[in-house]
Length: 195
Ligand code: GRF
Image 1: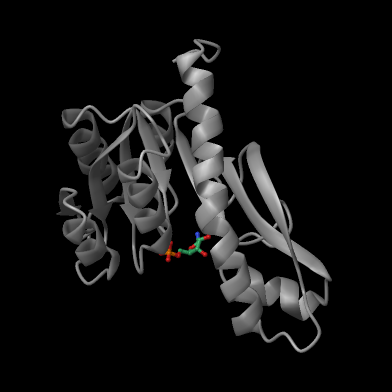
Image 2 (image 1 turned 90 degrees about the vertical axis):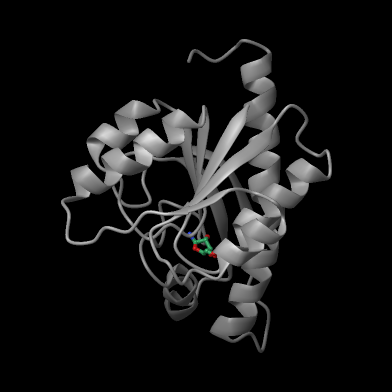
């Protein structure tokens, strides 16, 4: 299974995926490319350090469709079969979603459908919920929408700040993403999922 990862920033989830693949936790998987829409994304260096090809494909005043078409072409040229969004800060166009049917997944730092969008951890914190968490889900053209694959709860502790809560959620994201990938990849290799 050839994986392509899209990032816009720090890339800690991206690094967790690459490390899991390189550590043999996701057999028969390879991360073939990391694409960022931001040239200054810190995750680019993390991908290069790990020997993964990186590309910067910026929007540069083009339409979303034109930008997405260039990304889709780069992914297809490299034989990407599964696209992982990891802190990629753009909505995908319908043509991008249709180019990889049920093969684009994302991670979000809340228990979707609660708290979609930016600052999900702060949204949960401000709402005063005792339990929040993270979600891996299929991607469609709507924001943080699409069928849920896996979720994990994270409890708000006494004395938590948004920062401490966010850090504990992020720690869980890194293992949740790998667990979701393991489930998906085993489903594909069982032949139970259609392409
Ligand atoms: C993560 O919290 C992820 O859930 C959200 O954006 C953040 C990206 O962090 N979609 P990183 O770039 O993976 O470190």
